[in-house]
Image (cartoon, rainbow, N blue to C red; front, side):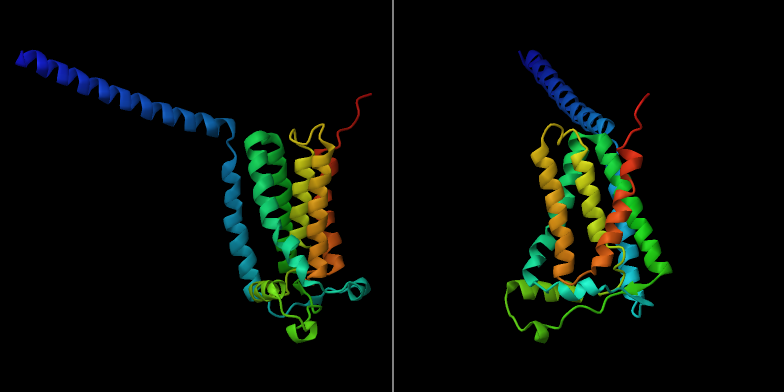
Length: 239
């Protein structure tokens, strides 16, 4: 009958509405559960503060008071091909941060504490003790033309040779290696620890071979990172 058909249509519409509401509530519940389990994604908002602060210093510190140089820098040859391990820092950063956030929240928290506090310390130091480099070669002095030199010129244009000591590139790379090696992901997997520290070491080496940093910057950056090791990873033995 017509009345029965109308009732069926109404019941079906009501069921469809309830079904879609259940699906929507389930999606919201899943998202809520995800962020409850891993609630610290908002730590990454620090990058907004860091980038504004860093590039403001890059624009305002044009005549550094202190030029960083070591006699060892003169023995390290410029090699433009190290721009590739230098640039791999971005992949290391994204990979380690994402993996620790997803699989090991405690290690992710340690990474953020080590890395962001160290970066803040470096930025404050740049303000108090404006420093820079004068070891970058000119394109004419290098006398080579290839894709690596093209990338180097782009980096030099975007990143002035100021605010270099301690090296944030080295400090953050070391923090990522330390945090990853101390995580559950690398537990009983020594080859992953070797990979993490090897990658970080290659990035640190690239900073001096590309003349982005002095060897002094590298060691100062590593010191800022490793100062956290006894605090976060070396627990006192119980007697």
